[in-house]
Length: 327
Image 1: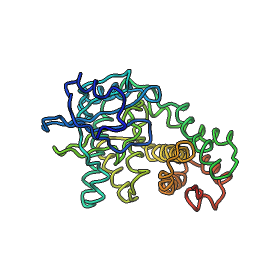
Image 2: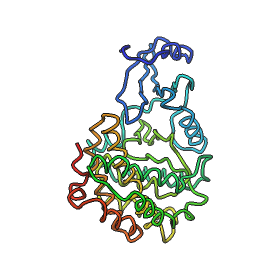
Image 3: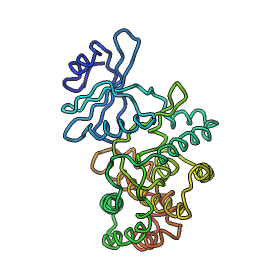
Image 4: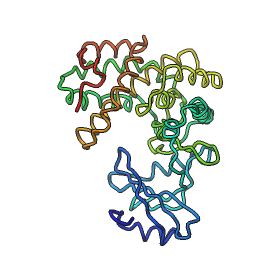
């Protein structure tokens, strides 16, 4: 298939030693990035090509984080060639078996798959944090404000924006000291971004936005998955599995709830934006799952200021519909 290919892809592949390969476009994600499977003309090898066109995308963070992960024994794809000016990265092909897809057809493997994913976080959290920017209050606030910026107008409601910011300041402030010196936070660590490899390992993808922050964040990302149902029983079992390997401290459950609410508020805003701005309505179907997890997080006493804001600003009919009936 050669239609709708990025300009310069053939010359890039030729220069990387993959000239004459078959180029197979793959389904995209929620960004401007596109992916192609590259099959060598001799049929004996394959690779993955990421097309991340500037200025919308920048390959440098992906390469920077991936290099650090590989250097520290984590299973990121090997990089074969790259051209930052054109946004091309040719890398190891992790195949098509996402953890989420495998568990859809083999639910009996769920416990083992999640244990392995938790074990990878244990390894990650045992390392000194990588050379990445901090996940500080400014970032937390910028992310949670996606909800009043995008979801609330889409739901037809006007809210107290200043009170929202103040509530999050109060709720999140206690955890800031506990995320020092911090761990590497991949930020999008969930069952659609974990690849099951032929050698039995799990491969990491979509880690270019890594920051240095709190160890609970990637646990939330995995166990309060926006794209896949994770039962409260499995969530609890995996948190216990993690706690048996790392002494997370007495405030970990509260911080997990704080970051759960923070992440879920962000995702509700992002999914509304993907619909309204980017014309991608399929994400609306995921909002009820995210909202349900956020309600559980808001029930924790550590989220009292934020819960009070939601009670005062998001009407009960919208909350009961777990997504405001968007779309």
